[in-house]
Image (cartoon, rainbow, N blue to C red; front, top):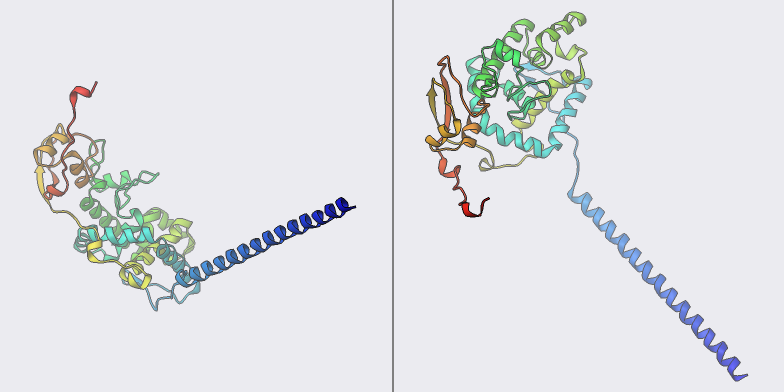
Amino acid sequence: MFLKVTFKMRKKQVYFLGSSILLFALAQLFIYASELRSDDELHQQHFNMKYGIFAIVQPEDLSFSGEEIPIYSSEIWERIDKELLKNTYWQSNTMLYFKKANKYFPIIEPILEKYNIPDDFKYLAVIESGLDNVRSPAGASGFWQILKGTAREHGLEVNASIDERYNLEKSTIVACEYLQDAYDKFGNWTMAAASYNMGKNGARRKIEKQGSNNYYNLFLNSETARYVFRIIAVKEIMKNPKKYGFMFRNKDLYSMPNYKTIEVDSTIANLSDFAQSHGVNYKLLKQFNPWLRSISLPDKSRRKYILKIPTDTDLMVFEDFAVNTDSVK
């Protein structure tokens, strides 16, 4: 009898102990869940306080090359707003525009002025290439994305050793000539800019079929339909960086290193040797003269070329590492 009572008591104790443990575990789980929820709520509050995506305030007026942009039209504003948002919130890409513009606009601007092309067209180069010597899938090359045929029509040399589409000064002149001719054909700079993307013949056909030479009236392919709006948006942001949240100091921007120029009118068999003879290396020679496309510069016709040679070589040419030739097999 005594053993039976003891067994029942122990059974109750075990049951009580198990129930207590379970209740304790559930309580801890509840506390943890509450703390986790509290932490999530706090994190969300901090996020909402410190981060936000803001809509763009519509500017009172916009223009391109002295021509008014009809932003009073809701359809036109939507298209501009789209490009402003894309370029405002792709911060790293647009910040690079600012940095590189400080380096290259001083070369582009005086050429545009000399050829009577509106200064706003420097932003066309920005959207074409990001101010980089890039090559498109269609073969357009350089800052101004010039096709091989167009380059040769305007007197640029394009072959396996030399491609003057990568010469910023010469390619900017070609762009000026193209744009002036387009302006003469279409009578306005906005349509001239659009033709830079779709070609003058393509632009002419659209004008003839649709009976208007106003870019904002035309139904165009998706790329050209965005093209001028992209230029307008980049111009607006780059002229008003703080308005769109871009903060930088002058020392944060890139600048063109000092260089001298050398005129050559004969073949250079080895550009690496040539570079070293002028106190630089092959990499620097190519960076300052990206139109050089091979290790040599053939010049059977004795044509004159201008080469840029950087002079701040103490910041650009570094000592080679010593090599233990005995360990090299």
